[in-house]
Image 1 (cartoon, rainbow, N blue to C red):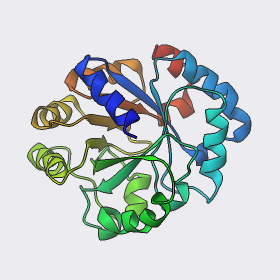
Image 2 (cartoon, one colour):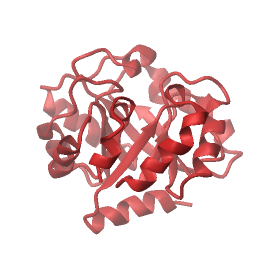
Image 3 (spheres, one colour):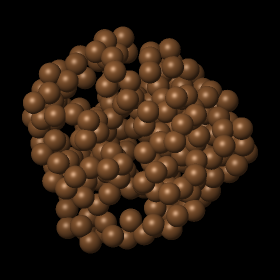
Length: 240
């Protein structure tokens, strides 16, 4: 039942870097899924993440089913709310916004999801979610009513990530946010990676292959790209 997580850990042991394409159900139409997933299949992507900050009910399930019919890549839910949980996916990042102080997103929303998650067969991966300022107000910040961590306060970012590990999180996700002006810089990534014993995910503001490589070189085990795909038809080819 830990196939997705175990594969990530095994890839790290083999020094293989991973790339997830994040698909926001609010930003893609069902009609465009097949052609888009064809590009994903031809790229270096190893995972597909599905989720967004504000998604209408039942949209995620329909989208995941459509994606699943077009790819063999693992589909992992990156849910902004309980309405985005679907049995059609392979795994779910059980996120706790450990960089914020809004109890709803630290534990409240997670409790709401438990009754639903108990009834379905879905791999659940506890993940500490750390939001870092990126040069603009992001959807995550708006929805959760929390402030991102200052980029210059690296010690606080590292301590927050390690606290997540100590609390039992199985992965840490450093996030600049959807539409971020700036990706998370290499100094932050490298310092956090050095302090962790669990996988490190990095996403937000990554717009090209060179920025992916910077994140990998700094220590990211899995890089997530999303917004760049909305603005560049050539990004996936470039990311091969």
